[in-house]
Length: 567
Image (cartoon, rainbow, N blue to C red; front, side, top):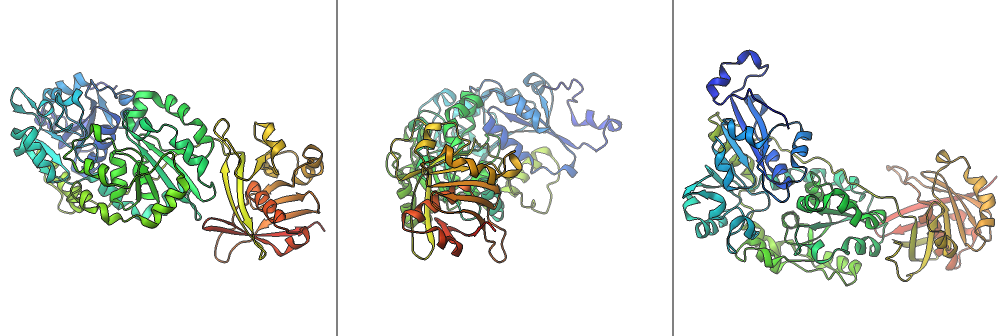
């Protein structure tokens, strides 16, 4: 951490050092974090303080959380000035802001504003609250010391929380203020960027996005069903769906990034996209078409954004039974993790009514449209700096930067071909150690690492383009029949939109995508092309009719492919 022995203890002392400042300093604010979740939320809140108002920003880590691993390093990477806890308690600030609360924060020489770090106050954490009935953030043990209320402002996302605060710590009620939920307001600001976010998560061009959300603890989705990410990517047709996963930052802190990635490595190699714990979860909420989640805040926010929401775990054992989140966990539609996931998603899409959960959502997220103004004005009041008269500008969240594995190299293919030149294809990744029985036939890439799959595949493709290999596609197809004498279809990519095809009986053909009017030329996946050709041949198609072209459909997506013989 950085050291600031020169940090002035008073505003008057700061004013005596004007020659040190390029920008005038009028006040100072300290962001206080205990976990990565609270750190990202407090940095988000501090964005409401305008740079032109001369407010110096610092951050510190309030020690003691079991989920603080790597927190100081993360804060340092954001560029904010980081003080260690000893320096923070020796300095004087005009305001301290925290999105978690702990009695040790009484040692700060600053008025303290505390806010929730999720959708309200819901979870029962006896290690923090000291009892089994008070939700974390609203307990007497956290909010008081020797009978004195520690925060100057306790931010609530809805008036409903006043009732529960009055029950758990009545002396804190006079300090409570309803400020809405600035993080959810940023989600709403981001809705115009939905298509951009979807494309970043692999759901462009007609593919739809399933987002898996898991909070932390044994009661979470992953705690109950650790194989669900792998089941999703293996059961959903890869050309119709993209799948992304959002895990609570406490999962990453407790098990380490390496530990998390090791546990989901197979699913990532089958197409799963992992959202980093620091940022991206809100963009995933905006982008998602379906959400499979639990009692965590990100699932609740997704339902609030009208996404088709299914619960695979409820976490009722660790929720305040009187909280809106507990009511949400009891009433939201369920997903059977052991059932047909594909069929359940399609059924939910037809039957889901977002308005059915609206009363519960509205009882937890209040004053959403004014959250930025309410939160900002309370901070400026405590800073003793005039609050801006104009509301803050909309502040959409950054595009997601997911982490991906290697692309799948073997697919289990089903589908059908029709006499009008239309072929419908569904491809599901074959995952070593997880795949049990073929639904249809196999299509495999020569670059894959399991030669046994190549021998049992009906379609074999070289997916590397000519620019990425020393052997041109035409040369590879000359010798490929010797290596793969039993395969019906051999394909070799030329570039992103063109490939050579060799059928067991027939000439070598060049295949290329046809550009729709007013649109970009679609890319041509060699394994998808080979799969469609095999289905077409099985249905009685002949090589001579390929010059008429094929229309390949994968769910809502379709692609026209033309063919030409060598001169």
